[in-house]
Amino acid sequence: MSIQQADWAWLPEDIMDAILKKLGSADEYMRVSRVCMSWFSFVRDRTEFKELLRKQAPLLVIPAINNHRHRRNLHDVIDGKTYDVQITLPYNRRCCGSSHGWLATVGRKMVITLTNPFSQRRVRLPPIFNPPKGNITRDNPNYFYSWVHKVILSNDSDLSSENCVVGAIYDHVNSLAFIKLGDECWTYVDANLIAFVDIIFSNGLLYAIDRVGMLISVDINIESYVGENEIEVIVPHCRASQSNMVYIFESWGGDILMIQRFLVKQPDHEDLYLTRKIRVFMLQRNSSMRSEWIGVKNLNGETLFLGDNHSTSLSSSEIPALKPNCIYYTDDY
Picture 1 (cartoon, rainbow, N blue to C red):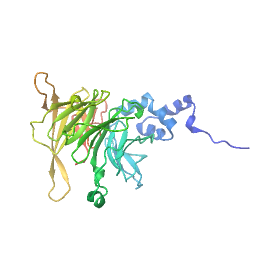
Picture 2: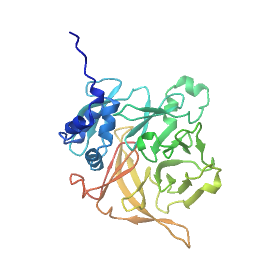
Picture 3: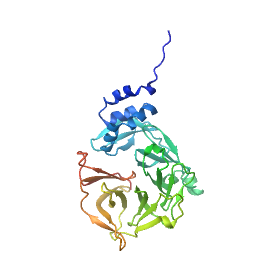
Picture 4: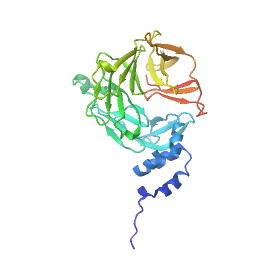
């Protein structure tokens, strides 16, 4: 008598529904989603899971607790819990961003790979640029890993939609580029506009900010980007003092805000910098005169998460464990 192995990947929908109804935490949904692509699809489309994610603070990617070189663990800074579920992320690729549940990594050939850590789906983008050859690459082959500074996505949509756009800050002068999924090459923004430190997508525009608070927007809705006509310099610079780090994000109310982070070097530690002050500004649009940054003292109960990730704002009223009007940040200097 032969014994046939059950095909767990294609369980009937009513049985999968019964299984998922037993789950109560995002951690449990993550475990189920990693079984196979079929189960991932069930979990991804489930309303209960989407609601849990909406109330889930961003997770930190940390070294694997078992020291596995190609895996990482996820840590929740709110409840201090490290999830047992591990994600695949090789150490020979630099992580250059996280956005809408996807991780962006870059290798020596400047190829950016987008990875969904739960479905393990990967999307390889065309090389963002060809780094120059010479003594720098020979003497320090890892030098160019840092030439892709930040990568974000305009939306998730499982990266199957042509509406998804990837934005990136790249090269040694922090230039700006973007690419629509399915395109064969990147679109490069005006080469005269450089030194950007953070980017976000909002209402069909790619916003970019530099260290002195200059804010520009790039229209990514057009069929064919042709250059200056699609770029608007919203704020030429910020009158406030220059800070070490600058971030930009969109509040729940749709306002564009800038965060300045001031650091101080510790005398007894050569590479240790501590944050001594944070300032918050809101973009004030003026139709009759140039827009400007206005200092604010309150985040209206929102909580911010800043770092190499896509800057994120959450409502502390929906996630009581969050501290309202507070900023969580990683050591990304």
